[in-house]
Image (cartoon, rainbow, N blue to C red; front, side):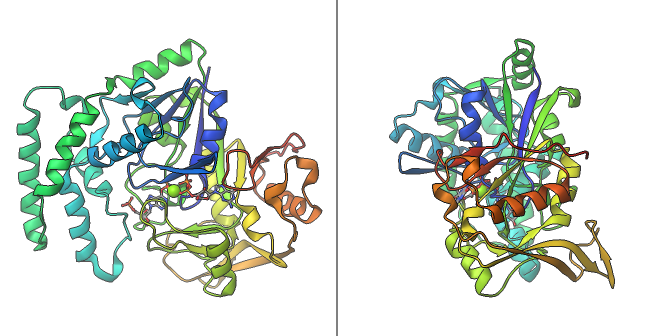
Length: 428
Ligand code: GDP
Ligand code: IMO
Ligand code: MG
């Protein structure tokens, strides 16, 4: 059995957590492949909203195995908080969560380095979530990192202290003041919590599962436009958020990838700094933020909002080989008279439909205007109830990008989802 992948096609927060939770009953295994506690994946059911950061979004289904893959970076402090809040909800994660021995640890000093680096950058800061993601991946690629498997190996504390000493020297160069002791104590408590879980060779396990015809869904974090290689560099995260990241982040060969579910919002949001061609600074932007409740699940920061950007979406679909699309949050635009979609960019004096190398240059979107549907989509329970204007909006997107929208999310709750049967086949 091949491994399916679900990943974000924009700047994150597309609704991955919600949709993975909905799809989980179709899978035996849900495996996170990259990122760390910079992610905030929200799920809603029985009037409870839950936000996951490191733990895969299949955790609420008792018969599903959840794996934190080798590509993920783990902060024990945040991991412990996640486990504690699951325990409060009566979820015993230890019986259904496995952790790769090869996943890297985020140290308290990684967080300090993140903060020091951002402070040093001043106005040109990335707008990081300050969870230590960049420094932890730097230590991974710099071959200095500590891994989950080291926790139970020899000299873990000595290895930890040696790396912290190295970090302290770098922090000194930033002339950044900090207090380590409180967080360090919490960190060791988190290490104790981690020890209550099974550390596994997840690449072996996942390949065994696929040979046994078990169904695996790889869950991405962030989104394609935040990818370290293909995102709006340098305003990106430090991992490969794209489909190829599922191969390296779980140990799956490229020919073992099955369906690639690309998820996108019916408009765009971005949190943190960096280019955003269709960003709106007017009342419409404010309406998207208000009705979409666009505040970060991890940091609480207000998300920047704007119209759907088709050149960027096409680029993301190409990079990932998305085989089907999932559209979320169109309900946020239920009251809009007019909805705009960017179909091209004016860039360096010329119209283009491709995604430019330097997105930090001025870009003017070229818009197509469409009529709003003025219908409450959140109450819709079957595809034949979709209003015509909404179908036209979706049809237009599908034709432009050449991939069908097979799933439509119409609200935050698990139940607010429509699986479409009536989809056309496009020649990509
Ligand atoms: P993720 O990071 O991709 O998992 O997305 P987040 O959870 O950070 O952000 C998505 C937000 O939109 C969450 O608050 C979800 O509860 C909410 N959400 C998801 N799908 C829908 C939808 O179709 N409509 C509305 N109105 N909200 C949604
Ligand atoms: P989910 O999985 C939205 C953004 C940050 C910042 C940049 C770098 O919930 O979609 P980092 O902390 O990685 O150094 O931040 O990336 N960012 C996200 N934006 N959703 C996320 O995750 C994000 N994870 C990181 O705001 O601009
Ligand atoms: Mg999120």
